[in-house]
Image (cartoon, rainbow, N blue to C red; front, side, top):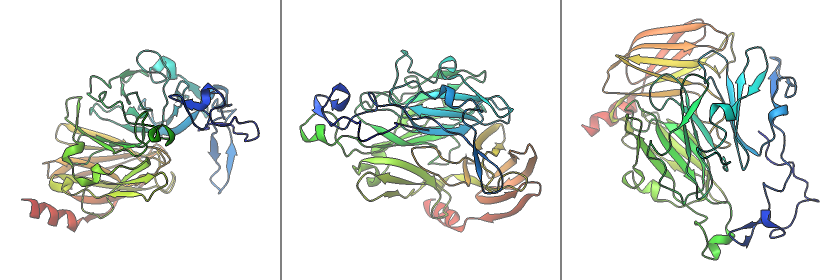
Length: 388
């Protein structure tokens, strides 16, 4: 994603015009008033080199936006990755994969380009996940101060529905949000939402205007009925810290069976939020290794089934805001002690299935061979025993 085509020799000074002021205070200019940069797509040649295919693939002709974050995901369950770009002050973009090396931009028609009133927003970070468990990947996008985040529910027919207010995510207007997104912090099988916050302008805060430059982050628990509950104040001192957050990434850093969070802060040390107690419920982790497909299995779709409940996620590169979470996928499975089936659909089109898997393990799955090994996480067992 390209943001601005910056030429310092032609960039106005703070306060020079209306695009260089925020609430009457001189600030750095943009993005409005500055030329937008182009989006680019590079084709991996498989030999350590890439070919620029932006024009040929249909990316650049529809890339007139101030793009801040981009993510790839199969939104139509067709085996082809689509592309979503969160844009600042311009309509966000959804590139539908045509299946033959080209894309068609359908953001407005799909309902993910603007807010529900038809206005542009300051799209910052973006995440993808199946928050309602219907098998279709949904979109979560963060925005600027005095605005709400966007939760777009995938309808399964190339359209999305704006669900922010119905999902009870529309109450925090004083935060300026960046990275974060979907992750299951309590292993109940429903993707929760974390948001890293922090302002871009320190100047208004010094004059008592607008939200503070350093802000606390937010944590929303998925209630499993299409709504979320703000549990930030209930989840420990780590979420009381005030920083100017930017990127956020998720991983089980201490191998104890729950997801931890790392936040990259502006002009400050990073924040490590260790999850303590998220592993009271069970989980399964899936680490992919491609052979015909790429080595890390990026683009592989992993689905798990426990009884009547099915979960789906994809191994992806990038997301959040300028961040990379662990390639190892983590699924909370609640009180279930076994997973009935794990299915991996690789980018090559091949499928591996593993049946009747005990919980609380990390599975290493290789394309074409299936399960190579399963590693129980002893720290998870000890933490669970201690909590009982």
